Image (cartoon, rainbow, N blue to C red):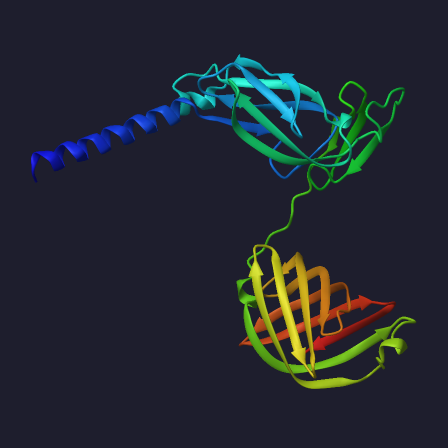
Length: 294
């Protein structure tokens, strides 16, 4: 390699290193509002910038002022080399009309990030006052718990003020013994409900040679039945039982091609020597049909 080529490669490497260092020093992001999300009430437009504390904020191209800058963000140490990088501007998003808006931030007059978010006036107007309302939310944050939310005027939003109850443990089981496929006789054994006649279902009919398959995902079983031009998908959640006595499930079903759907149960469902047995039922359009597998 001649001297000219060596010098040229050295200059290219040096220039690339200088550009990389300059870019790293000017790193900055807009953190909130998160791009593509929905925001309402009083919140913050915030993020960090490695080198500048002169941060201007714009919404839809209109300046709404400068953000306070220099707050400590420990997570930026590895990116910026220091932590006094945070900036934030308190803002009432209810001031904006419902719909999409563009939020842009500038450091020393140079654009460094932009997000689009959808705003919604949480009280139906820019500032709702004089309201004292609370509601309970069952099964939040976990099944078996109840959260209470209270309207907070200063936030123009609802805040969680209490959580009561004990989370309900979701039962689990090893459903691997049900996974696979089978051919069997599917005999309709019960029919009830005013809507059955409209669906063309009569008591006592049976269909031979149906196919079944099952796959498990944790405590959930996807059980498929097909034959006679129809395909049924049962999405079943484990309730009780085991591989010996049979598993009990509750969930939903959907039929293709009609799109008929409803609730479903499966009782004593098991697979012995490659064959399924048990009782499956589904309810839709005021008609409940139960069927045994053998």
